[in-house]
Length: 299
Image (cartoon, rainbow, N blue to C red; front, top):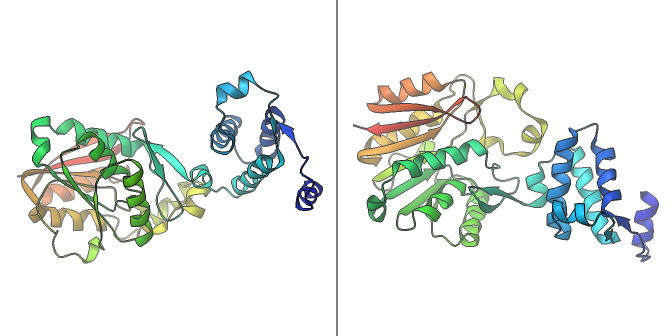
C-alpha cells in the first residue's frame, strides 16, 4: 500500500481496482474489528458517498473500475474504522426520521429510539392544535428532534436549546438543509432560572449514561461521541431530568406535555421523580423492549 501511495504522490495516476476487489479488501482489512454484515454495511454507505453507486449497482456491475483518488478515500476510511470512528462521522451525515442530518464529533449521533420518541410526540398532537403549538427541545445536539417535528408540524412554533456553540452551528445547518425554521438558542439548562416563555410541549434527550455504564459502551461511542451529551455522575444520574422537570412546572401551559428519552435502567426512578413534581406520567418501551421514553402531563 505504501508503494501505491508513493506512485500517486509522484503523479503516476494509474492505480485502479474493481469495486469487487475493493469490497474484498474491506472485508479482509476489517474482519478483526467488525462482523461481516457490519463491514458490508459500511462499504455500501461509503460507496454511495464516495462514488455515488448503490448496493444494487455494485451487484449489477461488479467489475466497475475505481480510480486512484476514489480508492484512497476508501483506504482512509479503513484506517479510521480500525480506530472505531463512527461511520456517520466518516461520511459526515446520517438519516433520522427519513431526513438527512449532518453530524460531526461535536454532536451526538441520532439513535433509532429517539425516532420513536419523535413519533410519540406526533401521535399526541391533534392537527387542529398545530397552528398554536409552542414546542421546546432542550439539549438539541444535531437538531434532529425539533427539525423532524417541524417537518410534520409546519405551523407549530419550535425552539431548541443547547450549551454547545458547535452543536448549534450544525443544528442550524441541518434546519437549512431540511428547509425548516427552528429558533435555536444557546443556554446552559442547569443554570437557567426559568424558560424564555411557556410551551405546550417540552422534549429532551439529556445526558443520562452513568459512569458505571461505560463498560457497556462500544469503542466508537467512548472514543468519539461528545462526553457532555452522554454522561452524568453516578451519584446524581437524574440531574438534568430534575432540573428540566422543575423548569417545566412553570414553563408548560395548562395540561402541557413533557417528553423525555431516559436511561433504561432508571425508568422507575425517573418516573417517580417526575410524579413527585406533580405530573401525571406514562412510561413506554422502545423497539428493543427497554423503558426508554417518558411522557408527563402538567396537572
